[in-house]
Length: 429
Image (cartoon, rainbow, N blue to C red):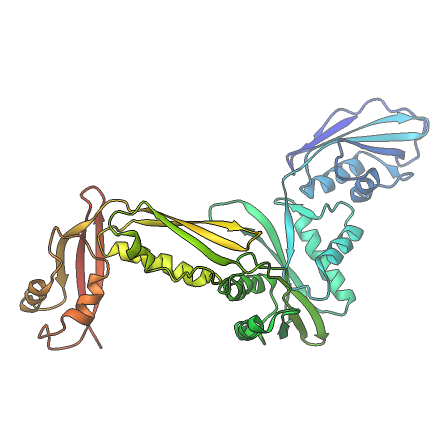
């Protein structure tokens, strides 16, 4: 007899029952003599048998086999699963044919501060017969993991729930499942940076202050590493500095758990500036652009300042009508000498000019006065900075009887390569 389970949770297709032999048969069914799974790649026969719920020597029948197939298929670990059986004097031999699901995603443990990832994965493997350290994006294995994690916490007298959510970027598929302890506060008591030099330590401690007293969440801590801690090193020329995953140590348990968190870091070499070449520029001479760059030959590269410098160059092009100019730095690092040179590729793009100027919300005579004073005339290269300069520096006496908030709406015509401005005046309350 045979039956087939396909595509995770399909309908079982049952064939007709063949004439049964009497050898090996008991009053209530057949003695299960053997179970074999063909097509396994990542699991052992013993793991498969344990997950099926069947036991060798038990009395079993069609209902048991169907139940085992459904249980295995519900995990999401198999794309196809079929079974067949035959009778022998020893009893019944059951055979599965399977195709494993290779599209599995990792687990991420957000705040299980009592365990390392390695320990948690080991505990899950010991309690879930079919657990390959990853999970499918469909099926019930994800919930099995959550239930098992809750049981592990309960054995440590941690009364909490475990929740999990898929992680996916906008427009993309599921990349991981995030598991976290829920309904039990886990709070950061202190933060440390082991082995850090004194020059960086003070800046890192200042950057870490917002973490104190906050919930312990590894995703939050990793974001802190990227946005607040790494810039401390990059501003000092440590361009290859890397932080490892934050490590938590439980220092107090009870109604809430307090943890001390350490951030291991590998600074790498301190790189010094060697040379800068600028190509692709025509609207500005290379020395004009070079003035925007704070790099000094032989000094440590301040990569944070350098990012601001490149942004300043981009804004500079915006003052001459090059709205879509690109500034692409290419770094060449000499690891032996610990130096870095930059090639700054400028793509200026098209020149955009001033289009129409309109405004609303103020009397006509005041609007006419503003238009008369507006020095960026139609057809002039469009200056992205002009709006702010006009209303804060160049001219303020428009003889308005009250104060206004002014917003601008910019309409870019890519075909005509013009920019039209609409100014909206809203009386201040």
